[in-house]
Picture 1 (cartoon, helix red, strand yellow):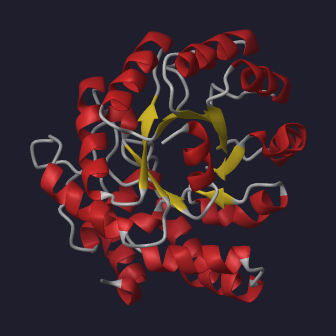
Picture 2 (picture 1 turned 180 degrees about the horizontal axis):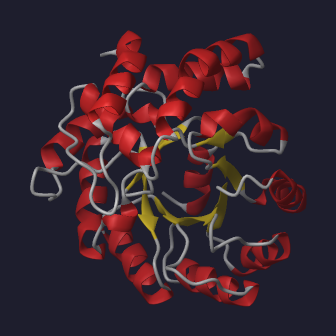
Length: 301
């Protein structure tokens, strides 16, 4: 897709990040991953992000990423596939170019590795990645890679293929400044963990969509909530928040890393052989997985 085409796709509905499936030895389990992505592509998600944060990008070797993205692309039909990308600048360039070659529709540039950096350093980092490829690039504002509004504006001037901004900071003041300054130059994606918990606030700040982690295992419910949000049906939003999302948040908050581990457990509970998470994450305890199973029982496929 051209940058403008993927930008339009991103803004057309709910988004999600499929978990990456591993076998018992911790290797990429392609067959079950393909089955899961094909199932998700049957629901209303115009874009799926392969090898993203929920897909354990941080635990993948760069050489593994193209195969994961290609597997998703092969079965996704009309659903566009965007790849995770990140680490240091040179490695990010290599990843971006490798997934462009196998047909990815764009990349989401996750924070660089480890260190804090000044705004000029972030500018040069994002610029070099954008200029190394032709397809669309989205930046993920969070942790040690928080672009300020003026820096983002400079990047938009320098990089025509920078088409998206995803926020994981929860700083509504900053994101509202960015949406006011950049207008429709970018598409805006909510990216807080369990994004539905913040969706109403981000909608008010100019974010029309977000990435839903729970779409991985309850896609129908995720779409119901998104439709209610966009339709202004606050009663339905509150019902789903109270019956599902707040209880899920309680389970997710019991241990560090559960924001990913609980999602992968949900995928397993729906009958897909997603396998364990890789270190440094840990899987849910038996008790926590039982609680999750009880929570999602009404939405078993």
